[in-house]
Length: 251
Image (tube, rainbow, N blue to C red; front, side, top):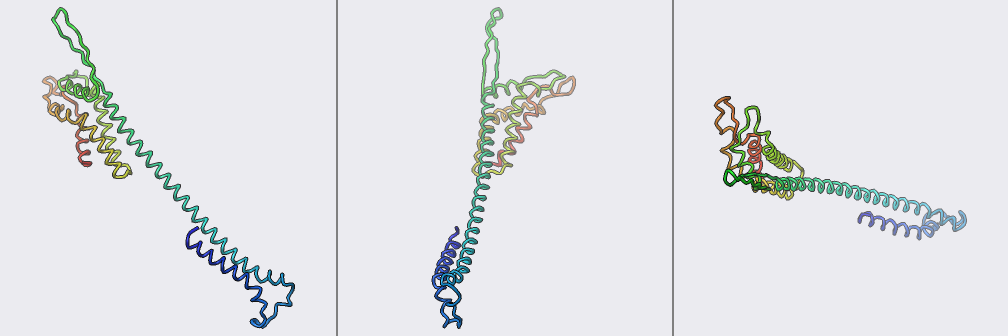
């Protein structure tokens, strides 16, 4: 019960008890009222008749205060439930975004590239297979792509290595945009964006920046058809350009 309501209930109860105690004596004083109640019936009936309205009134007031306190308590419980639901929803959202950042980092760490080389004299050539993972594999893949040529009827972007790196970049771009648009606290949003930026700058940006001169638009066109069949496709650098626009905003 609220402190003011409790104080009021205490006052009403004390006053009510006082009136119940003195009302039999008060109503039987004919000198005060000019009317004698001593002949109106048994003493018990007189006391009951004079105190019952007071008791009823006090009870009604106390019941009203109790109901008022119950309504307030119910409202507090409802507010707490709404706050808890909002907190649970926020924690779920924050946990989901954190998980997406971690999944992307794991996928980049799992990126692999296998290269086969041959060495030795012509009559005894030996094949050697080396597998790279993570950042090293991404660097090797992009470095090998810069001089790769596609057939006239093929697209470089369809090569699995290109597609995988393009998807990683687009996922990172979408994740940065998604984090920026969510209703997160500034602390959590800054942490998530900083983690995404670190992932980008540690794994993708340096090599893409280094190889930017090998973008398709910067390559010489084919002498036969006038199209470019070599270089790193713009589909990859489109996500790179977008990330460079987005990430400085969270510096």
